[in-house]
Image (tube, rainbow, N blue to C red; front, side, top):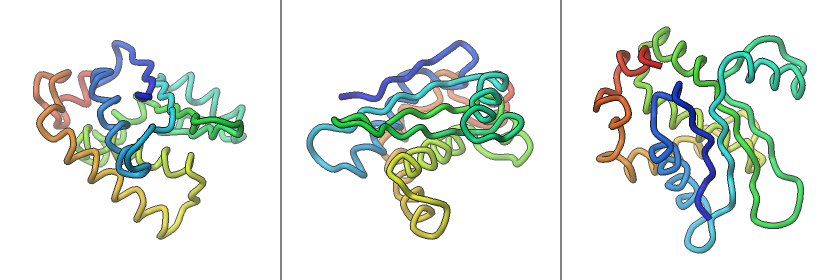
Length: 156
């Protein structure tokens, strides 16, 4: 099963790019066979702030939220990624948008797998990020005209 991505015009990357990153990370972690099902929702500040308040009791937007699936089957869960926050963090910290997007996806997936913040999660995230970067190194940036730098982040 391929990851399900709800992509909107405000996303700095195409649905294909988000899906490729997620699929590479899932393959790296799950190995051969059926991939767990993950849904990625790309949302604006207002939506992620509402989710943050409703589920974590926190005020304001955040970059990514994880919603693990507690049921049976192959569904790992859902991720909500704040695209406005992604853009702001890239501009504020001088981060490459594609690299930061992969970092957030890896962070969210690690939470879906039950990791909490710390060295084990950091190592898992680094491995997932590297797998996604390697698997998609020639395919990313097309939605931004090939530019994955700060100008791409500002186009959102």
